[in-house]
Length: 368
Ligand code: ATP
Image (cartoon, rainbow, N blue to C red; front, side):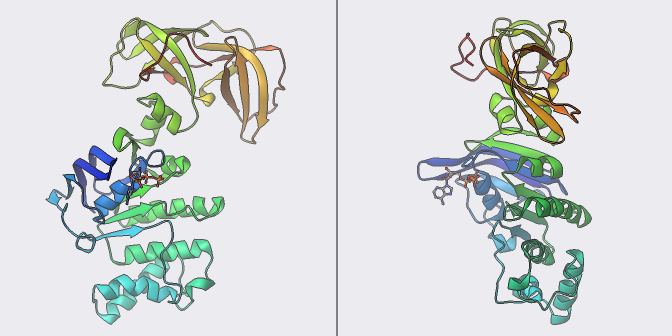
């Protein structure tokens, strides 16, 4: 297992700055996720780390050793792609053995490792099968076995599960996580699936326009996003515009069209000032419906315009006094409240109210 250091990495394709001064420290044995909207630079970063792209500027270090100019096969890493890239005319065993034959290992060792990998991915006994005679999940396991057979120092996974159905994805998530742990692999993982990232990652980086927007553990990024765009990208969020009335260390108070809010200043690099325009972010699950009117702080009142039963949660859209809509969700609902004109009261705890710097161009009046 190796640590990876990324120093001021930049890469452009023509006029597109795919990576813009990205610096990162990935610890040995860490499962590190790259997330962000389409085109933000995830694939460019993982391919640069794997050696398929040369950066325009910056360095990549494996365990402190500069590998920026080393070709992919000299990096002792393995990559698993979205399309399995298996050879359909080869057997399972032959597919797994391929990288080992390239390394010119003795035949007996290759056979031993293929057997070990087949057991590891629970395909023991299927070595002689043709790839075409396997299910999608089994093919995915062969791809994983092939990647791990060469005993890489680091595993790069680019959307490895996107061709699988929901149930198989869940299974494979667990499998990838436990295999990375068992083999002590450093893994860099690109996905569009937030649940996949939240459930497997030790830490994650959110990229925006080729730059790092935030790096942290899943709870850090989900619970304390540093910007509206990160809050919006991971999970669902209600945003309410307002103005700061008081600052007390990492807590602040904000007046909005919907009332008075008290919450946490999430971005450690930012110190809000009294009278500064800000955005409040509250997750739907942080708002609790109350039967009686609340004490007014962190409270949102409105009538239910839409209610949806989703099994584990009931989801409500409240139409609030300024005409905008606020979403809230109730876990383990025994009843689902119907839409109607009756006034409902919801409230959030102050540790669940996140105060964020308003994006450039924010105006004082809140727009629904
Ligand atoms: P997605 O989630 O859609 O896969 P991504 O975050 O992986 O996107 P990249 O594939 O890294 O994004 O692309 C970053 C930017 O660089 C995009 O604007 C993309 O169009 C551009 N880009 C990537 N590869 C090339 C290339 N070979 N030639 C020209 N432009 C490219």
